[in-house]
Each structure stands twice: as C-alpha cells, then as structure tokens.
Image (tube, rainbow, N blue to C red; front, side, top):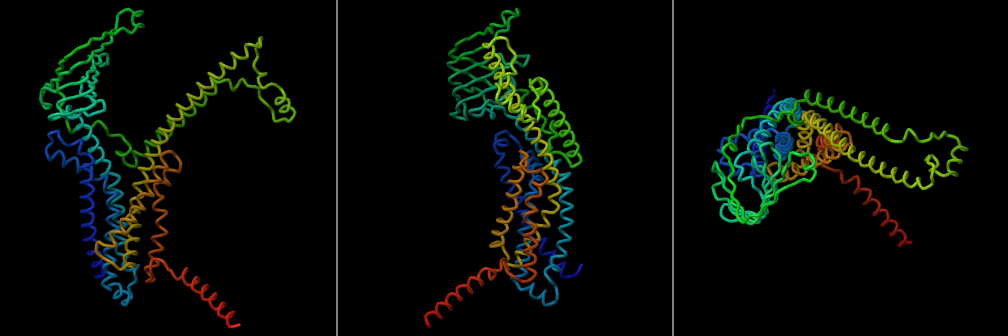
Length: 486
C-alpha cells in the first residue's frame, strides 16, 4: 500500500468509525424510547435491558452503515479538496479515480462482510430480541392492565375504561372474561368501578369491584336444553376477586418459541420457505379454481359457437330460455335462487381473494428480505462513490454542508426503497425489482458525479442552459438596435 492510499484510508476510517458510533448510539436511544413501555416498570435490571438493546442493534446496521459511509466519504474528500490536497495530487499526476481506488477495494470487502453480517448475525439477533420481547411481555401483569383494551392476566381477560388515583389503583368501566378449568370463556363480569387493594407486585392480587353484574353460561347435560342457551345473571354491589400471580412472573427470559419468521432466516432457509409457500399457494389456487367451477352451474350453460347466425338468434331470443321449468311463475323462484347462489359465490371469492393476498404478501416479504441481503453488498460502494464525488465537488469538510447533503441523499435512497417495497408487498411490482430500485436509480447519478468530479467541474453545468438564453436575448437586442438605426 502506497503512502497516499494509507493516508486517505486512515483519514476515512477515523471518520467512518466516529460517525458510525454516533449514528448507532442515536438509533439505539430511539429504539429504547420506542420500546420503553415494554421495558419500564417491570423490575428489570440493567443487564436485561442492555441485552435487549444488544440483540436489537444488528438490525440497525443496514440502516446506519450506508448513512455513515456517505457522510464519512463527504467529510473526507470534502476536507481533502478544501485543503487543496487534491490540487497537489493532481499536480503529481494522481486523478480522483486513483485517489478513490484504495477505498473502492475497501468497500468491496466491506460489502462482502456486510452480506455475511446480514445473513448470519441479523437473523440471530432477530431471534433473540423477538423472543426476549415476548417473554418480557409476560412479566408484571398488573402493569399490562392498559386502558381501552383487553389484557390477558392468565385466568382472566380484563378491560378497563380508565385508571386513576395513586399508582392507578382505581378502575372504571371494568369488563372481565374469566376462564374455567377447560379454558373456555363462560363467565363475564361487568362493573362500573373497581379498586386494586393489594400491591401489583404481590403474589396474590386482590381486586374489588363495585356495582355490577356477573353472567355465567350454564351448560346442561340434556342436548335439547343446550339449544336454549341458558345462563345466570347475578347483580352485586361489591365483588372481591383474588387473582393468583405466583406463577405469572415465573418466566424464563431465555426461552425461544419463535424461530421461523422470515426476518429470522438465512438465505438458504428463505429460499426453501419461498419454494414451500409458492407450491402451497399454487396448489390452493388450482384446487379452489377446480372446486369453484365444479360446484357452480357454469358447465351446464349452453355452449355458444362462434357463428353469427347462432349469436343473432341468442340475442333475439329470451336470455332466460335455458331455464327449464314447467310453470311461468317458477321463473321467479329460479332467478331468486340463482341470485342467492351468485352472492354466495361472490362472498367465497372475496374471502379467498383476501386469503390468497395474504399468502402472496408473505411470499413477497420473504423475497424482499432475501434480496435486501444482496443489495447491502452494493449499497455501501454506491453511497461511497456519491459521497466522495460530492465532497470533491463542494470542497467542504466538517459537519456543516456535508451533513445536510448526506441526510438528503440518504433519505432519498431510503424512501425510494421503502416506497418500492411497500408496492411490492401487494404485488404491484416484482419483489426483486423493489429491493434494487433505489440502487438502480442512484447508480447513474453516482457515475455522473464521479465524472463531473474527475473533470473538476461543478455539480451541474449551468452554462448549458444559461448561455443559449443569453445569446438569444443578445440577438433580439441587436435586431432591435438595427431597426432603430434604420
């Protein structure tokens, strides 16, 4: 490695590591605030919280790394141009492409490392973080009594309209679904107000309800009595419930029950899942199409040949002639029955359409996740070329203008990819194209900027538009002056 390559690489790596650390810290803090409701108030020690953030951090790398590369390249090459170091290089016969060659090789290696990271580390972190979140959700059930929604507390499902008072002890508009030993919901309790008498962290949670009703479904032994759906209704002024929480907080935080979602899989696993889902999808569509045709009356309709005389006779005749009934009044019954059958078929089609849409969306998400791992190889190299070229053009280092440009370019790159992926989920565009859309759009811009920077030109040649306009007005003014002299 030559001295100039070592100098540029050292300057660039210092900025890249610093920017990456700062950006990662910002995104991790944002992640903490995003999941603060799931972490706070559950008596977790700092080790558990730190472990959750560590597991969650790998999925932030595909977002932080391109931004860090872009900003570091802008700062490095902007500083070199601002300090006239590029002028010294060019006077020595070193072009911009030669000054970028060492870092291009570095980013090729970085892209390969990013691919390995995305294919192995990110799925592992997704498994750990997702399962840890699910396990943390089982802790401190009293904290999970949130307003306006049903909350599962083991043997009961509770919903409250409002919580207030010290430590949210007092409840309003309480609805409780109590499970029996067979895990069926046969008991419903409604109360206007309620109060938590004991501490929410105690093994036994005592809750007192006021002014309500208790409904219980009665299941008789005789079959004919079951058709009457008997139940009991009891009014109460005060009703005390003791909820056993001794086993509720006995949670193994290392338990992993979820390991097969598409974000948790490597490329080979994704390919296998895509093939399996696609075969299932095609088989279900073929089976539904065949069954839908067989159960309908389509095969019983008269077949119309492609003959003008036959078609003319069908048009002139009554279109309901194919209904074979003895009495005229039976037409109405046949038509009404047909309308009911058609409506049922339409409902079946709508239901299956939604089902097929969800399966196709899941397949597309698998494909997008797989292709994103490949895109990451080229994303860092692409954004480095854009950042280095822009830095050489604007000739500004530091965190001022380079930061603004880096954020604008990165947001453009990120949201182009985001909109394309959202469109690919419902099959508006192919999933593979969605993953590569942002890269394909910005690649010509990267080569354009590199050529402009190599030729020591600005971002845009304004003279292409400005000079013809000036010449046009000069010609008009000269014609007017000639007319005045005449």
